[in-house]
Structures are given as C-alpha cells and as structure tokens.
Image (cartoon, rainbow, N blue to C red; front, side, top):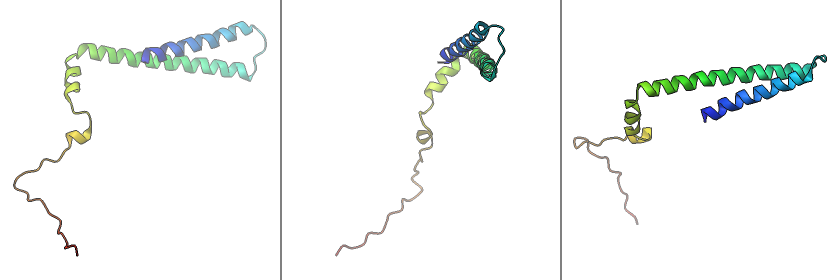
Length: 100
C-alpha cells in the first residue's frame, strides 16, 4: 500500500508540473500558483513516505526475528488482561430473594 501511495504522489506531481510546462510563458494566475503548490506538496509527501518505507524495510531486514515474536503476541488487549482467579479469593455470591 505504501508503494502505491508513493507512486501516486510522484505521478500526480509529474502530471501537475507537465500541465504547468505546457502552459508556456503566458502570465500566471492564481490557479497556476495553486498547481505549483500542490505539486510541491505531493513531491514532499511522496519523498517523506519513501523515506519512512525505506526505514521500515531496513529495520525488518535487520531484525527478522521480531516478526515471529509479534505473531505470538495475543490479538487484543482483552486477551492479555484476563483476570486470573486464585483459590484464596472467595467468589462473592449474590443473595437470592425468595420468590413468592
């Protein structure tokens, strides 16, 4: 999914820049400055996600044993925090009222 996001950011930035290049040397309006700002934002976001994806890939490559330990952890916090009953603690019983 990260690769798709990175590709989409760079592709749309490229298409926006090409539309500005095709516009030529005509005077720019507000729309063109917004396209330039959008292109810069897309390039920055694609670059940022690329760096994060590379760091994650490098970390997984250096620590392959952690994938096995993560798979062995419980699926949810509820399973991990189940109360353990001991024999020393008496269970409280609710008093029953006679039905009449």
